[in-house]
Length: 234
Ligand code: B1M
Image (tube, rainbow, N blue to C red; front, side, top):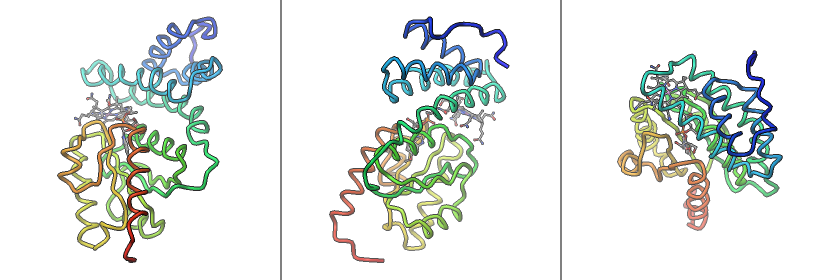
């Protein structure tokens, strides 16, 4: 399927290879992204360097042309698929942990929103840091979130939204938790490109996570704080 792409990726130096991966991400060449990811790892790049500098960098370029109407949904889906092929190789490395779970997170992309790359990344990084992660997927409604909180009793509820039209749904979930007296049972973390700290605060979340690494740091801090506090049961 990646017919004309006869470039020998191994023959390229690091900078050329990353540049080529940007092109391959743009063109949605999943096999080439997987190969490029493996080559960079073999050359000693860390998983997070490959992720940030090659994969996310490539997706940023796709995002700009999507915004400007140069790329459309089918093409961007192919790029997303290519990105996932690289992420699958990084997943075991990012998720590697030998320690006892630090806590549990239930995470999902909110109702109306099908973007899942960032949510998946945050999940992988959390697993890598030693958290158990229950991923509810995309387009998750409030009832599904509530059922998962009841079933898994997580320390953290993570929500992701990439659209300005879906981010208000996070407030629907938090308000429902409040109405049912469940809000204090877990830390609520929110993430996604259109959010910011002020928004997180305004909807009653505990914190906004700018990126997956930030999510890990905040999750550790807030779960430790919670455990340090004497929890009056229920
Ligand atoms: Co969409 N899309 N998209 N899209 N898409 C954006 C978000 C957009 C900014 C593009 C643009 O115009 N430049 C724009 C939103 C504009 C807005 O609302 N202001 C947009 C639009 C408009 C749409 C559609 C409406 C287009 C249409 O149909 N006309 C449509 C909506 C569908 C829907 O959801 N109902 C749509 C569809 C799609 C695709 C299906 C084609 C595809 C998604 C495929 C998939 O995810 N499986 C897609 C993609 C790929 C994008 C862009 C190009 C890339 C998003 C991405 O994956 N980024 C995006 C443009 C952009 O952001 N550059 C765009 C990489 C990812 C690693 O970053 O998700 O921000 P991010 O995650 C980060 C942090 O935000 C944070 O950590 C992550 C890692 O560091 N984080 C969390 C995220 N979630 C977290 C949860 C946490 C913690 C941290 O919990 C604890």
